[in-house]
Amino acid sequence: MKYLKLLRIEQWIKNFFVFGPLFFAGKIIEIELLAESIFAFFVFSLAASAIYIFNDYIDIESDKKHPDKKNRPLASGRISKKTAKIFFISLLVINILLIFFGQNYFKINLYKFSVIIATYFVMNIAYTLKLKHIAIIDVCIIATGFVLRVLAGGYITGIAISQWAILLTFVLTLVLAIGKRRGELINAQISGKTRKALGGYNVQFADIALSISVTLAIVSYLMFTLSPEVQQRFHPRVFYTVFFVVFAFLRYLQQSLVFNKTESPTKIIYRDRYIQITLVLWMITFLLQIYFKK
Image 1 (cartoon, rainbow, N blue to C red):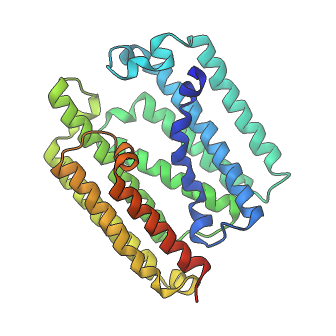
Image 2: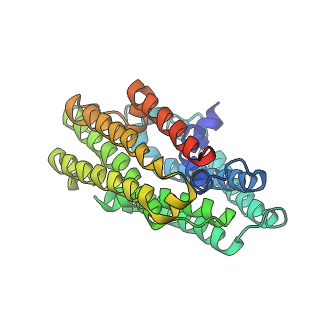
């Protein structure tokens, strides 16, 4: 169990974004493309786990002083630094081997896919060492990481990704990143403990940035559903899924700004039944427009 916590398996859910191009192209049931996306998912997940290990290794001393992070395997001493190094190097080697041998089984655009993985890795190393302490840049890097996941899913399957889909991915994850920072600001006011990047934020700025990002996300999704390629590929009724998106964002803003939920945005999504039901209804409705056009 401690090794799974070191790898942060629960965070692999973020890498389901690599399935985005396949889902929105209406080709989720095509076995070959699905296998390629699953391959990309595991490559990205192993890369992400390597980054988490590196982050925990670098932050081990500060994590020991944090009320929650002190329970992480490295900070608590349940896993030694030497073992963490071995895991880190092993994950890198496994990833390189997977990409190398994967070209023999999948129609991978090896160059572009490898560049995406390498970019994600280098960017997050820089984030861990320095950039996470710089306000605004920190949340933009988090959002860019999700864009790279979507691009990886597109390159490995050969599915073209619309500009609106890329922008939607960026602003959607920007909403989650800013929401998390806002929660940290609220907690910092209570506990007095903070991170360096929070010096460039305050609650008022976070509220404005969150509102702007939500607006951009809704507009991006609206333009995505109205784009000519989406209207031609699916049924024009796909536009009506916008109502579910609007409700989900409004509910999230209510939880954050009205009820002042300070927990991670992903935890809010996991625990809020209204958002969960809305997401399920959105997915069902969207799938109906993709696979049952008549």
